[in-house]
Image 1 (spheres, one colour):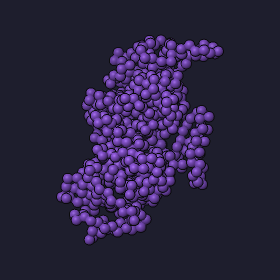
Image 2 (cartoon, helix red, strand yellow):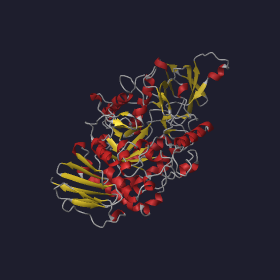
Image 3 (cartoon, helix red, strand yellow):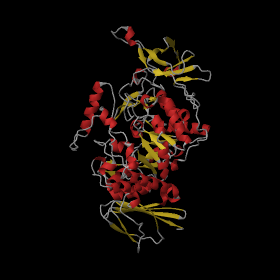
Image 4 (cartoon, helix red, strand yellow):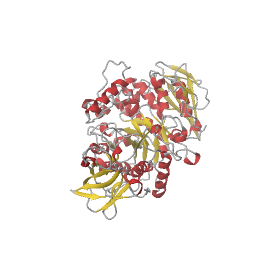
Length: 622
């Protein structure tokens, strides 16, 4: 079935006459019925395993499901047991959860008020990643709206929602979704998400949505009853791979393309963050990401709006972010995990696991200049040559951070930076991120030093699955000796203690850290030399013996010099610069809870930095 960029042609949708148009791919079935309002309506068979029905006997908010009769099979079971009743795999609203019936939802019924919203350029994204369930006490979309003014005052320009596709239970990180089109019921469902996005746009905030196209969750996953959504050709860390290149893959590809188009067209989302695209296996002549990009470009041309595709990628392969006309997949940006790894090791992170191959300050300097640390050399962690040089990729194509949901929550205990590092080092890490020529991201609560841990949590109902997740989590951290038990993912306490404590923002030292972040973000917006993301105008020098780094950036008549001391004692740096310095930022200032009462200026090209601090200098007319 051909994709129509103008409207959704998958699942149940209402047309301009108010009738429901129903599209279902069910190649395993000899007959398909829609069950609603005590009615049993037969769908008409189409080509390539599709089924279709147009009816006026279902209305907005009515519940429905499909009854499928599989092709005859040799079996000793009574024939009636072959009839399967399943919710719509493209359902928009699972009000009763993953095992409940689907709810008909009119995508065109919402009255948008963001007609004047044209988005913001990608290079202006200052991203705030949040988890809907733990960002506020109520844990829903409506409660996020109450924090929009706070986010604006902080200086945020884009919020990133961790996945909201329907998952089992009421609490989950979101990567166990089994209804990619349905919006989590415990968060408020589709209408509440639209309302949140509408309010964000009215207030000048872009919205990024995290989506998962590399696997499906375990509970409530009935895709195999409909057709070959999965393939045994490949495996992912989470089970069967999605069928993007095996037999009968075309409808599966269309399913996810339709999902992408829906978020942009019908929910007004500004950008998608595609989870772990390295786990998407596709050897088609046109990679699924390329095809997604082609359709998004068509939609963008039609609407006159720019839509961004951001990927999480563990391959250091610029092919993913290179334009399609140069053989790339055309993704607009990617998360740069190696910047994070080098930064954390520079700050004293134990070089274990995937941190083991990072030489803190030297590799941080390399990442400032080259984005990738591994770009073709031998990787001890992978035991092979790894990566390629990102020569022609701009700074706006890389997103950097000192922490995110993965790097916090995938620790055994979920400790945040504020628990692991000193107050001064926490400020230094933030400065290191915002001084880069890349897009900055902060994880919810980071800006005021939230101390509640962000841990891994679930709310499955299948007891065998619950126990398997518990055992898997314990096994993953068996070699770690913290003196604490691995938190139980299924426990209410694990979830509730992962929520932010908003009362802290008025307490010391959290109040000082929040002011620091606001000033730092404002600094980046104020000076073009910091906001213009030109990787060709960056020079980073690692002073390994002192565990210090000198970062220089320039644009037109402005130059900044960022001096970072990652050591735990004072360091005197010899500077080989002749321009006139103006100190515009000092993380150790008493303004931000530090001890420095003045902003130093280099004397005889020498300057002394306090431990775990960053100072930023500006020079004009260079």
